[in-house]
Image 1: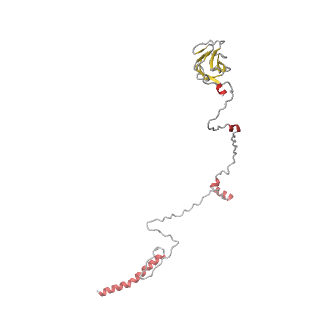
Image 2: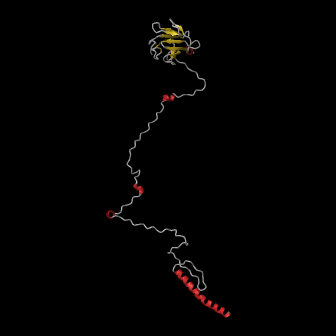
Length: 268
């Protein structure tokens, strides 16, 4: 039994080197053919084998994964017709115009006419307008009284019935004519044709005794009344007496009287 084991061991030792040489030559052939990029470790029969660098060959990815880089696209040649080929042969290729130059710009647009009107200068205030500005006055100031531009107002007639309701007419110092025409000193021109056109009555203020008198014009056919009484001569007037002329009623409201008269201001 010992003899058989020794022979078997000797036989295996004799076959071992040949088997290693065969495997090493097979690996070398695979590396030379570029089929295996792995570098095998050293073997007992042969030394380390270095793989040749493969710069031009593509490196495949792991098994089961696709190559991420897509294949290059090849542009198809443009097919020209016979007419276009003949035109290109005569004139040559047309130059391409950039898109920014092909569009019309504002500089290439035809000029337009624009009317520019000068602004009108603002009027400057004249010297009289500047002098009419309101002045701030502090403290009590003395008021100067001049002369009357017209006869001063001493009372009023206020329309309380008929045409012109709510209107008023001033009564001036001295003798005042009352009628429908605007030529009268106290015109009641509100459309009441029952009032005489000229001087249907008189209304007088006397500054000496500060009294008012109403005097009807007896030459007129139209009748007047004071507080529903028809006077035949002068009638002294009191505040809020009602005078009827035609279809119009006016109330008497004095401004001057026993408490005030314009003479007090003129004398001061």
